[in-house]
Image (tube, rainbow, N blue to C red; front, side, top):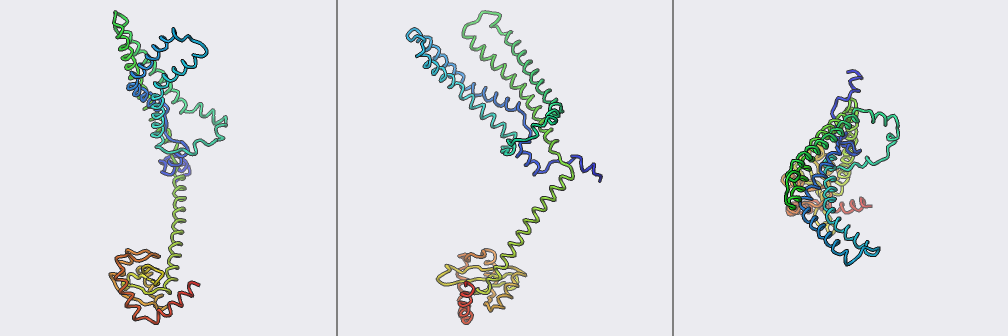
Length: 367
């Protein structure tokens, strides 16, 4: 394989590459989606609050105009009028603004996968590079974005044209109608205009996001050498973790082997399992598992127990249950209290000399 093949970005980005890109804010994002969602949210909220808002504005206007005769406009009364005006306007606009903010946050989370791009806000010196700036201005991506912006302008203009043509065909402009019809006309005109606007923006947003998705995917493509290097680094990390696990396992095995000399008994299978137990009256609430092992390590435990004269008892079911349910350094499971107590009772009767020496051995180990 030639070096040229290794330098070509022909491989899809790995999960690590995608995660790092998302952390740096490099993911498909289309501003048109935010505009579309915000506009849709605003229209939806207005559909529920428009009547109440209009009634509030009407009551405010009636109150203002009817109070002019009793309270003239003066420097002392203007702040009150402005406060009432801001309260009336705020009551109608606040739900719309909140809906737009929530919609913008939602679409941003959808595009980013609800990940926080912690590195995207960092200052980058590349932004001050004039050569890179010219390359961005005259790049293929800029030309496509310009085409999308032109498409937005054409779509909005065409929507306005169709809306105006539909409105001019209304009987309001050609025949006498009742005054109440004006409200119906405004409502129908707004619904017609905004529905067409949402449809056109939806098409444009879909095209824009599709392009951004494709462009981002192409930018994140990796060469075969990059994939190999990442895999090698990952394997290196796994080797380090594996070495640490092996070291911890060896250390634990050494501690278990050292504890055999101060044990009360070793319960065996007889060859597959070996569990080392200790019980000190007045100190331990129940027998404690000092060590356990299977196969070769079980044989090492048994050999070490024989070397130090530790009693060994063969009990297959108890050894299996102790090995399966017990944890090193913890008391035996409660369901095995009776079985282990019987084993210890036999050992205490038959190995009195060993337990006489065991007290001295434990004192020396503690010291």
